[in-house]
Amino acid sequence: MTTTAPLAPDDRFVIGVDYGTLSGRALVVRVSDGAELGTATHDYEHAVMDTVLASTGKALPPDWALQVPADYVEVLKTAVPAAIAAAGIDPSRVIGIGTDFTASTPLPVIADGTPLNELPEYADRPHAYVKLWKHHAAQGQADRINQVAADRGESWLPRYGGLISSEWEFAKGLQLLEEDPELYDRMDNWVEAADWIVWQLTGVYVRNACTAGYKGILQDGKYPSREFLAALNPEFGGFAEDKVAHEIGQLGASAGRLGAEAAAWTGLPEGIAVAVGNVDAHVTAPTAQAVEPGQMLAIMGTSTCHVMNSDVLKEVPGMCGVVDGGIVAGLYGYEAGQSGVGDIFAWYVKNQVPGSYYEAAAAAGLSVHEHLTNLAKDQAVGGHGLIALDWQSGNRSVLVDHELSGVVVGTTLTTRPEEIYRALLESTAFGTRAIVETFNASGVPVTEFIVAGGLLRNPFLMQVYSDVLRMPISTIASEQGPALGSAIHAAVAAGAYPDVLAAGKAMGKVDRAVYTPNPDAADAYDRLYAEYSTLHDYFGRGENDVMHRLRAMKREGAMKREGASA
Image (spheres, rainbow, N blue to C red):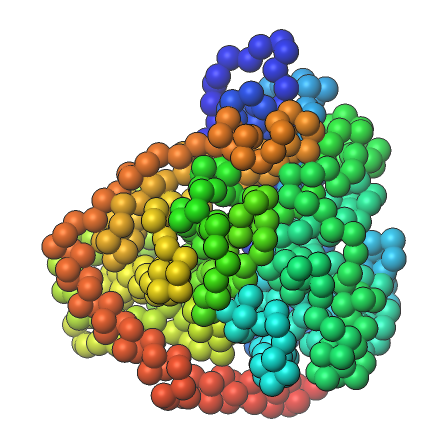
């Protein structure tokens, strides 16, 4: 959404660029009040490579998800100038630019920042590319990291809820070493995309404190020891020191100045401030004015990331991490999340919904998602007789196990597609309730629930969440939460505000208690949640290991197919 707020000759502006899973979005924002003046989106040419490598057409193994870093630069070349044009502002009045990224989304580069996939001799090597956040093929390495860390009593492990995810830097780095050691030796830096794009803007490599703390196991200024890493693999001992460690930039600080080449790409003035990189979820907190202790912000899109601040340091089982100053300075920033939310709904609509539903939706001028929601929303809670587990992309919190998979229980010959769709919507709300209850039980109380992200477009889904959680739900008053958050950080980096808290108060936007729980629906959802919890523990806590066995068989089948086609 853009505003038609009148402009004054002395107005100053900042640019926020949000790098999502499939596209990048640029937003022009007025510094004084956060007015959103123009926006533009650029879809990545190569999207997500999760079945074949684009450069060769060769099939990728299961659970891979790669991207092409050049697609990120195209966002700067196309979306930023288009947003400036849409805003109708003088680019010379822009004082800063900030960016945010999915995480952990690392890539191997040589010393000057060139990605290995851009070296001709490595263009056909999958490990030379960006490993997107939802690349889960390093689960075996993550399992070993967790086991060895637990056996050794590593002090940092409880700060991550007792488990490291396959999505994170060290598991993916270990996978690179063990599956393509030549590339591992060739790379000089294992860089988060959040920091790589800032490197392209400034010519300076600065590692952001958020990604380093949550995804890079940096706690109290230290990475895991060389001895621990060598226990995983003797060749991995120097990973932290040689491939990861670098200057740390604090959130809201300036990483450097916009270089001449990047100024030409974007149409922005050379030398303006470039904010230290950040993670899409964490950067959104000041946008939604969700920075006080107890305010949990859920950024709901393809996945959901739950972030909140607290003035206490606790161990929360299955959390993605707790980092001092990980969201704003002076408070402990906690993170949890669900690996699949909007992705689950999209998978179902793409693969399981009959063509007649598409025809009916088109005739009504609706998307299939809207049509299915309309068909299902008036059914009594539990009227479909279904319960689902939201694990089609594994479980990030609180089980931290990406070998888990989706389940729908209760289907009959009369079950309708819209009923399964509703059960999937509800399953993600149950997954969020499991996270909230775990935080509450661990001494980090959740006192307010705030939502940002694309799934805000479905008011029925928001009401389900309110009913399931038994909490009012506030909503961010911006359709571009991460991009606005990056713009807020850019304003701080440019010196327009003393800190992120002050900038968020002036530029952030939130609508309080937009959705409130319906007592009757909440009672009914309590019964369904009890069933969800039973299945959650049965399949997720080792009572029945069938999901892991099936995933192993899937990999075996893929290897046989690859061998047969070789």
